[in-house]
Image (cartoon, one colour):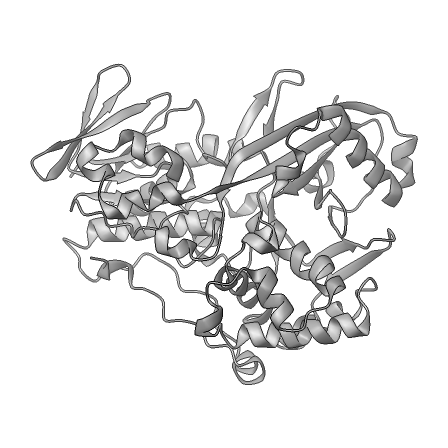
Length: 476
């Protein structure tokens, strides 16, 4: 069986890993000169080093991404953070860590110690979290989350300084453009269901080292083939089956099974017209995208020893201390920090110098040494279509991995995964596609990993009722 995977992002790579591990090597066709898709690095000519297009992190609740890394030996290149550092509007830094109590009480003390929220804000927050945990009412399912928060008595400060801070980082959207169920997914899985769900895993090496180097070696050592700069112009059918992928140079890559793992905005460009016009794919064209920007800074001295920080009421949202996280001495470029700004539409039209000045001013207000340190160089990167927007009703537009053609699977975080646009969602989609492909010979195959179990106290105290997960081998 010859399996052809179109797209070398996380979804395509997850499919390749799952299939290769089970004795089915694949051919992966990637149009760019590197793997990883949106979770990739690029060579910075000024420094001769690889820079991630944006900082990517995983959480403890991301069970499939963790399994993907464990399977391929990538786990050792992630650092687990058991304390987060929230920078309040006044510049004071509040550590956020779990106690020894079971979920959902493990983070109660951490929330209580956030000094930039009043006790009124925290009371409203507790009421809101419990309401979200118990499930979304049918009449509220298509509300924007901003309206849900108002209906459930959230204070302006709680909305701006908690709900917005968490969700804009997790979903890269503003609260008025977030589906209530997607918001619920973030808070239940991360903070409430299991005590390890909130732990943050951060890569300690450039993403190119993970996916372009070590993962490529893992796949090719087991018989799979990686073809870079292999742009697929069109998928070609013979009768009612997919037959080949035609490359830009005219070459036809013939296969028995195909997995289309391109970003949602590129899918229609390669599908035969007979498929592109079907309802399942027409809906995909209605998906919207959200941008993420990052500002890379190199100083002549350290501005903080913190490995990361989460900013409240600022343009900057996250700071990642890449020098500390990589556990290396500063390079010739200096001490390296990356600032992440999700849902960054407001930056459109602003000049780089204007953005840089605002970022430096915000950092200087927290760490005054920024005012005296010398900025050796900077780089700004915007991924304009970083994720699909989780707007109300978005799940109705997301197709299953099994297409209407029996030997064609879709993979990508934009497909039906029960997850938003995350690395976890991408890996789950790849696993689902691989399971569908294998079910013809092994109906009982199971690849997708289960969620972290919901703690007994979380069920009793918060009333969490998680939906039954779809079986990957039962898609039609």
